[in-house]
Length: 244
Ligand SMILES: NC(=O)c1ccc[n+]([C@@H]2O[C@H](COP(=O)([O-])OP(=O)(O)OC[C@H]3O[C@@H](n4cnc5c(N)ncnc54)[C@H](OP(=O)(O)O)[C@@H]3O)[C@@H](O)[C@H]2O)c1
Image 1 (tube, protein in one colour):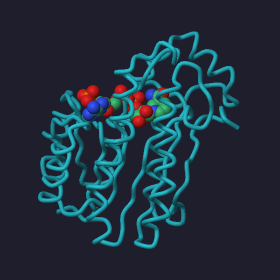
Image 2: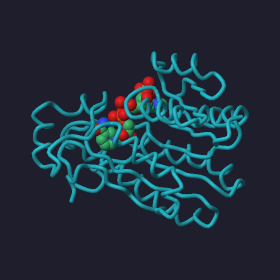
Image 3: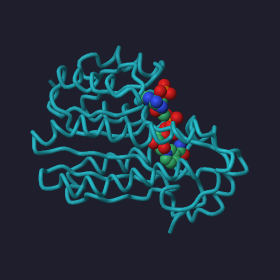
Image 4: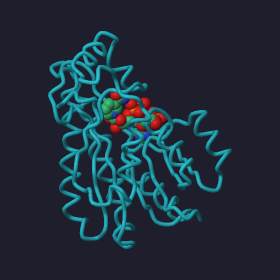
């Protein structure tokens, strides 16, 4: 078993999750992740780090499967030290036209499944009397953004969950924070916004650019580090000043 406790990252096959997995493996962590589909990146990690990387095909909304995934991870690597709730589903378009099915899916993936996975990992953290939970949120949770009302509502729920849970588990050495991210390039954001919309975001952003995925990874690494040992129950905005 690696000296560094196990990190579970939901949705580590591409986008921010892929960059997180890569950075955490480079930092010497043992990393487990899941997604519905396998990517060449996952194949590469399995080949390069068979002793401290694990991936399973799993839909986050399948609660029994998710529980089995966590059980298999802890059987292989010991208790979960850090959980990063990264996987999400984004709704797109004006709320009036948002399909009921998409609203339901956003709630199921972004809220219910986040709570399920957190609860499953939390039991071991409480036994160990230590743990770190980082929930990936969005600027749309804290500011109104046209076209993502339902998605923003689910991310606001995640921020509320972060605060409530931090209150409950702080005395047991567990820190819970969320990162409300601004736009960065990924499959999700490219599907959501066209170049005109990105241009408008850049104009409204004091730093006059979109975020780099490494900057998002950097903030999450900071929240995992001892330097962030006194931070809990917070939503950290990482948005180039868009919401200031
Ligand atoms: N991109 C942005 O500009 C932006 C801005 C603010 C916040 N965020 C947040 O940042 C996080 C990462 O976003 P991203 O842009 O990197 O997304 P992405 O490129 O779409 O990647 C999402 C990851 O989650 C997995 N996933 C999605 N649905 C899943 C499900 N039902 N079950 C299991 N795995 C699932 C995907 O794999 P499969 O599809 O194979 O399952 C993939 O690995 C999300 O929480 C998002 O809300 C993104």
